[in-house]
Figure 1: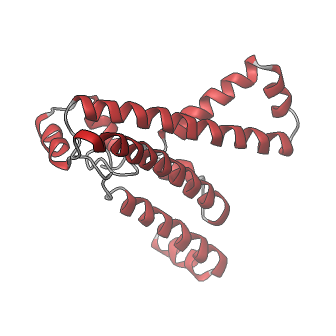
Figure 2: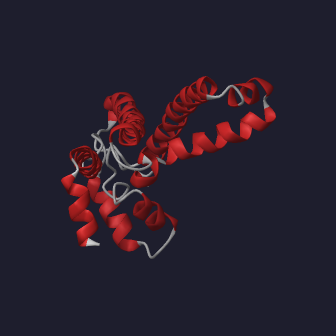
Length: 185
């Protein structure tokens, strides 16, 4: 195995792709540690320390710990995966989407663009839902008149984080090695 890796690193293009993929994964790990502004981090530390193997722990494991930190990448790649499934299912039910799927590479590019927009919409919806969850459980570090601003920042942070992870996955597809979305997942 080490001999194969050593031979792979001797090829300049392959070495560059491996390094690029590794660096993008480091960016994701770094982003998983950046907390969303306006959220009380102690609440989530206590919450995860007190829970025993429930769905939140599973989701936290799937996001690489970024849900526990309530980081800007807490949504991870899940809105993209959900939107991909939705668009694939809709190509069977909606004729214009079905025609796009049958148009070859150009149709696939348009479907990918629709999937990206759907990802942003789902991330927005999930960001709003998380904000109301935070507000309901008194997890906001900002109270009173700053709540509207906090809502804007939290929703924007989650949406942008999801868009960044989606973009990084696509960059790994193009400039790195393997399927970027699968590697991130």
